[in-house]
Length: 236
Image 1 (cartoon, helix red, strand yellow):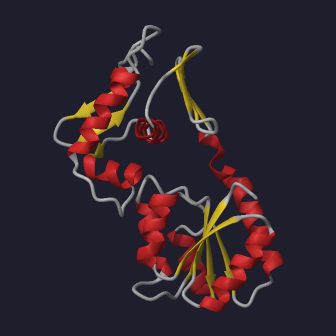
Image 2 (cartoon, rainbow, N blue to C red; image 1 turned 180 degrees about the vertical axis):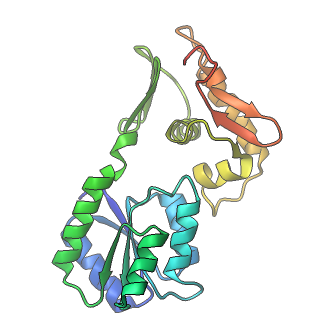
């Protein structure tokens, strides 16, 4: 099975089922949603590599969801292909202006859609840029889910790993505790914000080793939350 995951956002079951079968034949993993609320939750929780987004949806249009994705730093680079029966030129321009990466009108041939998905994922890198991240001697290998300081393996729990992965993927930006809960724990998980503080302390402790102390990369931003930054630290 292809490691890439595609989220299908389409309210018509027959079309959604056809898309899922075409994608599975092409060996993509599939997620499905029939409204923008469920779609956004899946994007935050499951991190698909690409979204097939219908224009007309219950509870809000696909264009509304697209605007929300492009306003958020953590989802801005997510590739989106708009699916719609709208063929007027101004609709095409509107979708592309908001941030759609491609646009295909119904009816369409599944083979054409798969070709466009492959092309877009190649251009976007499919998230591969974040497979191995490094700041000085600190290395995070997402594929093996390991963290190293120099040649030494850093012992940390799965939540601390997810926190570090998110921070290293989004450096130099301050995040509130609520934002970190949404991005790391998931939008549909209800835990107290102070839980973030507990795991931040654990992450900092894990980054304090005999090899080096990189705990100062996780900075407290007074009145806001936390950020990952090597500016002014010994790791810069």
